[in-house]
Length: 228
View 1 (tube, rainbow, N blue to C red):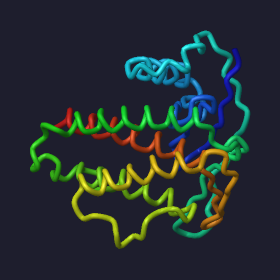
View 2: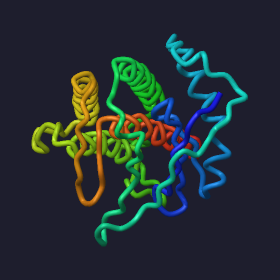
View 3: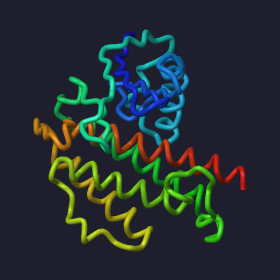
């Protein structure tokens, strides 16, 4: 069975190989080759997580699979402080009801795993500075997860006003996730695309980026906690 990949250098030394047929599933590495090579393992992990959540729509996919690079994108600067990331032709495909059901399942699974990681961590640890971390500490990463998800919807002009973002982290995470689930359901069949800061966006792109973003930072937080 052939499955298509979209490969991009998301930022310097951060390559991602997106699995188009399973949105939000990705291989990652510091080089193009590492990202592509990590896809089979990431693919199996995603399917295992979906089976754990009793979502079996992808059980027809079994290794060995022929992963084919269908699209490739190189990031570029549109301004001194903005790096434009990929808009693949695959991102133009309108969402289906099946896509939104899948996204809901994986987003709920991601959120449960994230909350389980931090649920027993003392506040002092969540606020402890992490050397070299752009977001300063774990609470900063949690805020970044929510605000980036809000920002994705803002690219489509579909976010609630910035001033309505709650100050509390639990409330912010919950309100933004409610926005995501509501908007995804309402965008089935929508062909809308927008351009912001030279970067193109669509509902499918927002879906894959949202699923990916929370997962990658959950794993990052888990790694940090092992070092404390």
